[in-house]
Image (cartoon, rainbow, N blue to C red; front, side, top):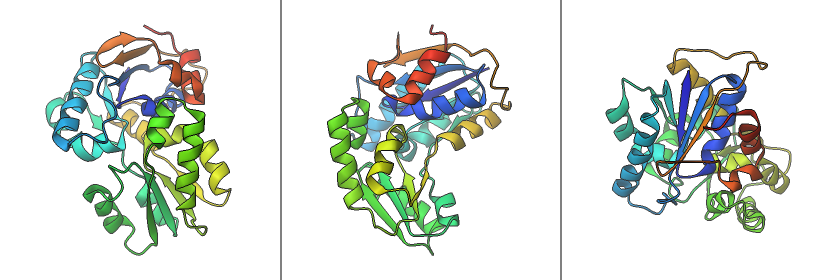
Length: 257
């Protein structure tokens, strides 16, 4: 079986590593768009075109499911991607984990990109699932870009700025950008041990396997292949990916084609 993931950059690593842990034998296709990133500053129409091109590149490899491993792309392009690829390829979007965060009780803080923070999509999730919970939205300008470049100093600066805007009584911290899940250690060091962290990688990985009609496999199952597409071109994992545990897991455990 084969699972594809798409994002503007290496934010897809967290969900890809989650799929690898759940289903080691799955072939993985990682489709990103270095030629067009960052997607956040683009208009919704332009972002949708870039996301569609990235999804089409992944779809050419005939995966059993496609994960849109990007909150911003899910907000703006999920419907267009589903309209083009489904029902032939099930498409799983990525949304901030606001529903489970609210279920755990507040206060809740959501870290997200400026494009997602305050968006009608995120505000609707808050109204639907967290209307009775104290929610703080924290935009994190520059953090995703810093993670993409594996720029340690810029990551530290952006994390510190977001931590300063995070209420001290936060009970649950929602990581509303897939890139942020690659630096949870740095974020935890900045905000302390008190908040529960909620990302999306594990949930979307499990949902992709369900949509693909399969289930987890034993951990000792031989690993599947790894295909990396950079704006449609077959390539190796970007060097920045290997700066993170998730990228090193994929690089070490997966034969690359």
